[in-house]
Length: 371
Image (tube, rainbow, N blue to C red; front, side, top):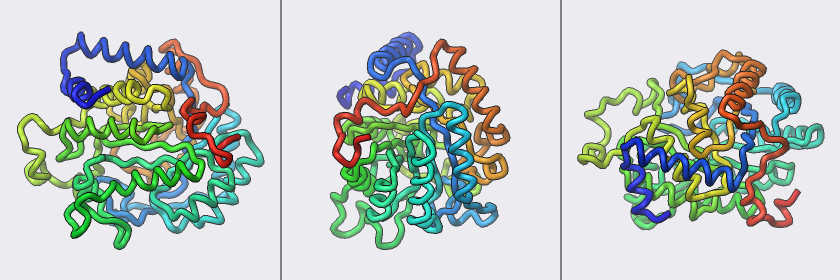
């Protein structure tokens, strides 16, 4: 899809043409990745983070938040639950936490791979190449690193860089700087990972043109996994506390600010599917948060083919509150599994068997990434 076509659909509000878009996306999903819905068991292993992202509830400035790190045995127990439930993948997610020792995590990965047939996905923020290579050698299969927005100026405003790590467009000599996460994603690909990324929708100052460029970036990066969700700032963050009058000047440009609505999220899922036909695309917890009744189902009917049931022990879930009122905070892993099974069956889809690799994996296969 070309930029102007993507932009047209992002601005479309009429029900009849949008029904045609949903049909196109669903047909594309069926043709390229089939009717199976793959379940990825989410394990939120730590809520420590060194970043000061202006919207995220686990950023290091949230002093009132109780912090935790799961033990290796707790993580292994969750992985064995995933096997019991028939999942093909576990996703270990955390804030950007240097307290997660690279060697320790490599050992956890090796233990999961030795004791199960699970694929292992990591979502741990920006880490050194040596650590990423170590985890890949230990058996990690995939890495998720959302770039949040392709507008580098906006990205740096909501996601302040660590000192010495990167530069913004306003810095001397950096006018043409590449988005730092694009470079990391390319390095992950060279290490043999399947790579995933995604964006927030409706960030203050994010225009329709920005969001169209984000969707084009999915294609240029040739992502195997794409995760998108609405901008939901935590109330205990700078953006969560800010009023509409204070953020930011360009958001006031008439007709250009992209909304953070449920409808816009479905549009981006559908357009991501049409732009990257064989990617794995989840219907996310954020959708279930803003529409508890049918959010996940509608995402699956408009291009998505993955859901991520939460395996995190209940005592930790409320502490991993990246945005407010997150769905499934109090549900046990068994309850979450049973609920999702029923929801998937209710829309006439079946649960996938095995790892659920993206067909795009074959295009990027190297000796390091096969198997």
